[in-house]
Length: 357
Image (cartoon, rainbow, N blue to C red; front, top):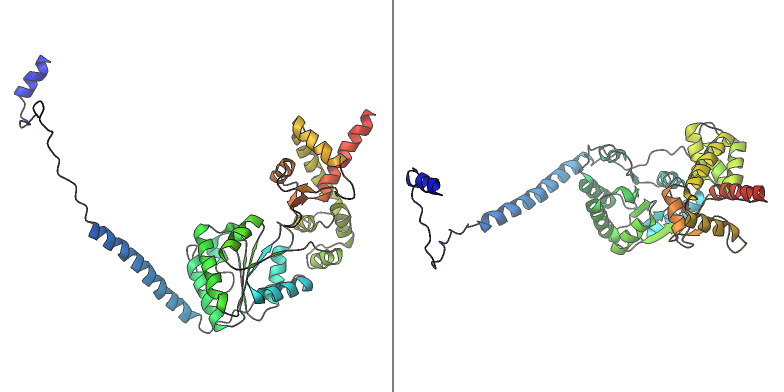
């Protein structure tokens, strides 16, 4: 303490006033903010963004003045019945199309787009910098140009009455992009153009439906003639492979597309799938509660409750969905199902019971 007092006495620092007892502490000078500068800067940024967007939009529109949004020729198989429904419904109001993953939803939309006079189709998979330029609009868009892209679509719908705009993959958009999309749909409400938005997540479509006046349409499962027709356009198509997949999978378009992509036969493909299903099933059934649920599902099969149907909100359905063993069927039944998966589990379950007896 004494050394500290000496250091203060001989220090070169200027003497500081120490408030005495019962004396208020000195008031520090208030920091003054220039609110006018902050407000002015904010408004300037907003004004710059608006003006920059408008200037760029004018430049873009001048480049596509001679452009006609004609769709590319589609080489796949068309589904005339679905095309008729989409054409009829989209004339009344925007259509929100639901279809589970690998059910041929994108193929259907490409076929419908090809059947129209003017059509712009945007797929949201992959890199935005690439996907935004695939519709063929003669302008170079970047990944942050989604708003500008939709502005161009709106101008094209004004120039070409009856223009069809298709966005495939709503689930891949972020919040801001969905907001711009909803604005485009509301703005296009008084024009004769058609808008179709698809998603493999039903909840995404219901959320968008709250913001706009639209029609939700569930893509129906393909029939056996349709699946043959779709796969005929693919390399390596074999009639007997599609027949086997149909019998084992109650449709199985998602399996057929995957099998064709791998270049495998149906017999080898299903044998590999069966092993994957059984490995997952053994891991899942190690939990006694889950095993009991699976047992009840299998034993309660009857004509009123077809094998493979599980309510969307059930615990068992959620476990199977997370492992890719069940798909969401439609919005009416609210059920998951996959015949091949459940038949594989049933055969394994039955064989264990027979071995015990």
